[in-house]
Every structure is written in structure tokens, then in C-alpha cells.
Length: 256
Image 1 (cartoon, rainbow, N blue to C red):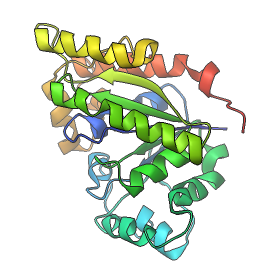
Image 2 (image 1 turned 60 degrees about the vertical axis):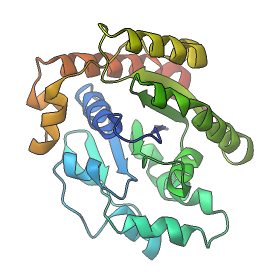
Image 3 (image 1 turned 180 degrees about the vertical axis):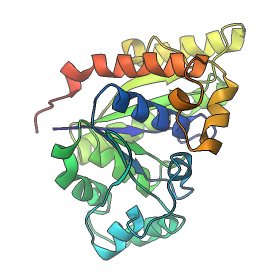
């Protein structure tokens, strides 16, 4: 049974999609079978993976009651692409009963086909993100070490706890890690201390340093390991992937 992980932060510009791309690719290179799901109507994950909008997008599965049809990107790595039409799905979901369970129903038939299913959530705590949490075993949060980023942590903890209480008892925040980190900046160290106060041992040891290669890679349709394998970004995401793999004994076979 796969680990279903939502990568989420309702503040935009924190490297969320960059993290999904490179964690997914890193796990695939480690021999894990990985499915990425682009739940963001901006389709940044789809674009970053060099995949064009498909007639088998997530929106089509929502609206036409189709099964999810993964698109292969490379060995061990598939994606469910997004499209701009997905923005309409959130409006349509508001008219349904059990509206937070749609993604879970779509994912269920695929869970035995993958070691990891990773969902790239929109930069909001709207209905699409709630669907992702309701379908997930874990939520992983990348956080930029700025004051405003920390201000929103209480809200995301509250939302995950509400989903856990009312819809999906398995879900929990399993990991948090700093992105765009600069150890020379006192602010970054202070913010990291605050993050540790919130999450304690769930804060990963690895901090993803500021690295221009991480910003450049999506334009080529490549992950950081292909684009700049010797860069700090590749080094840091390899370590992030290793830390996630180390958690497999805890999260890999969660009981229903």
C-alpha cells in the first residue's frame, strides 16, 4: 500500500512545486514507484515535468467520472496532469455532498500500483486542498524562513486536525522542512527555531539552500538531478529524499 503525501503550504512562492518535482524524481531514482498528482489549477507541476495538458487530466476525472489515467514521465515516475479547467472543479465540488472525498475515491484504485502518491496542493486551504488532505496519509510542509510564512502555520495545523477528526483519521503532518535557506541570515535561524517550536522532531534535518539551479530547471522540463546534479539543490533534495525514505517503517504500511 502506497504512502499518499500532500505537499502543502497555503502561502505561495515557497518552492512547493519545486519540492514535489524533486522529491518525486529523487524517490524514483531510488527505485520507488511514484505517482505525482497536480492538484493546482496553475498546472505548474505539469509544466515543470515537461507534460502538456492532456485529455486525461484530473479535471476530466472529476467531471466525467473517469478513472485517473497516469502519464509516464520516466522510469518509476508517472503524473496525473492538471489544467486551467481545474479551477472550475472547486466551484462544482461545492454543490456535492461528501465534497471532501472526491480525490480519495479517485486515488483508491491506484494505491497498490505505487510506493508513493504525492499530491501538489494549490497555494490555499480551499476545497481542493481539503480533498488532498482527506485522501492523504501524510502532509509535508515546505516553509520559507520568513516571518509571514510562520504566521500561517497555526491555520494549516488546525485544518489538518479538523480533517483528521472528521474525515480521515490517518492523516497527520509528518514532516516540515526549510526551503530557500541561508544560514548566514539571523532571521532564517530565528524563524527555524520557531518552526522547531511548532513541530519538534518532525522538522527535517536537511534545509534546502537558496540555489539558482532550482529556479532554472523547470524551464527545461528537468528535475534538479538531471539539470545540475552537482548543485547544492541536488545535494539538498537527495538528503530530503533519504529522510523521507527513513520514515517508511513508520508510514509505509499504515493500517486502515
